[in-house]
Image 1 (cartoon, rainbow, N blue to C red):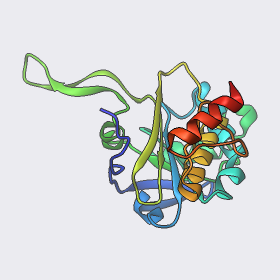
Image 2 (cartoon, rainbow, N blue to C red):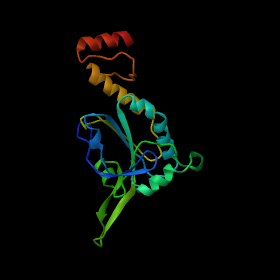
Image 3 (cartoon, rainbow, N blue to C red):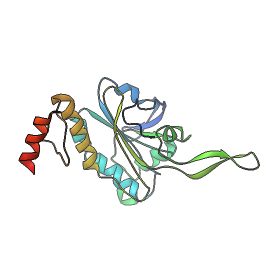
Length: 210
């Protein structure tokens, strides 16, 4: 089920912040009333597509932050795995230089609650609990507004890396709507014309662009 329009599931977990510090009881609640949040999941540390995404988010971090948005990563790895990866140079497959928080979801409950866990626990014929599927998170991304409500989500399968510029574009669109009351049409980018929710406004936009 989609989380769009619903409160983002609450959690408390350990995160690695500032590129190497452990923060216990990390929660997205600290941003309510203050910042937008881009909360994204990735499958595993020390893999192949994942470092390209995390480093790409770091490259754009200033753009997110100047729009009052916190970027938070999460995977099912432990805090120690996160710490080791953050302290591994990029030419060795690491993500050294990433400064935004990375949450450790070792129990997989956060991934499950956000609907991105690639499998689930069940009981087998012997009555023993086992995991069916892949015990990792898909490449889920959730844009959460300042009230803690999910306004946009996208989930990619493991091989498909995300477009970080698109995540930034969606943040810009949400911010524009909240500030101006204008809805954003197809392929809208910051600075483009938008529309009021009226037939007159839509007709004028369509006449100008098509």
